[in-house]
Length: 258
Ligand SMILES: O=C(O)CCC(=O)C(=O)O
Image 1 (spheres, rainbow, N blue to C red):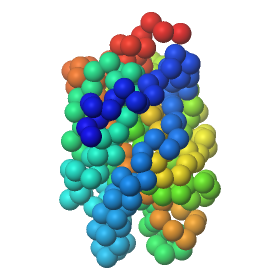
Image 2 (tube, rainbow, N blue to C red; image 1 turned 45 degrees about the vertical axis):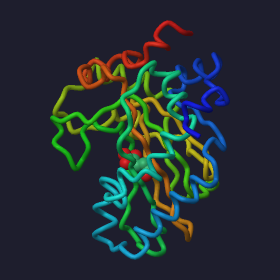
Image 3 (cartoon, helix red, strand yellow; image 1 turned 120 degrees about the horizontal axis):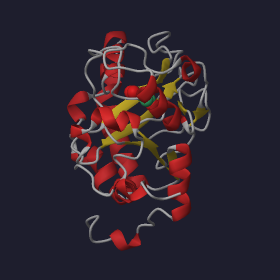
Image 4 (tube, rainbow, N blue to C red; image 1 turned 90 degrees about the vertical axis):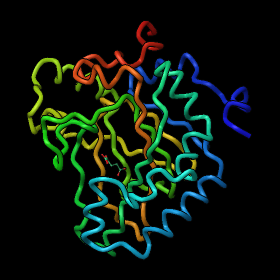
């Protein structure tokens, strides 16, 4: 059955959830993705990564995506396309550009690869990335994170985010920042620990592109695995700079809501 065929069954975002998203920049839906889809994704990822992980490969893939050749694999894109997620994204953005790539991010156990994955400091994606030209923007509208391994313990390399940080970042981008700066966030944001996103396989996170986030080391003996999808409103590519300063430019359905 396709997504379109069973879309009636998907619980859409409520007015309360939209208001929460406006306030915090984050929404979490538990158990949204079926276990069979998660299982297929995990088998693919572990099958490809397991034999190939060396210190150099981990460093490289941590900057980009693990198993880059799987970036367009149908069983991984299905975590987004064949689930309720596009409908939730549409509830926030109105229209969305079709997704054609997934990013896999693994935090490997420190005890197996000590110091290979240092803490990723607070940042918003696509702005002043340490490995890219600071004059380039690789921004988008909405980050969707799919939990693929048990992340019930914050020391397992959980993503940590700053609820409401999209308001702070929009002010900073409009008042203090300019293209080409290498600072990723203002010092007040950099000093924060953030809230760990904890979950189990099948849970999803919807996060506004301006919510700052960081990632810790994984102190547990098994890998932490997340899949990320970067969703854009069709107008985003032509309004990247303005979307940094106006959090609701890419979100027409939310512009006039409380
Ligand atoms: O590893 C993660 O969960 C997120 C990594 C991240 O923030 C990024 O790749 O920009």
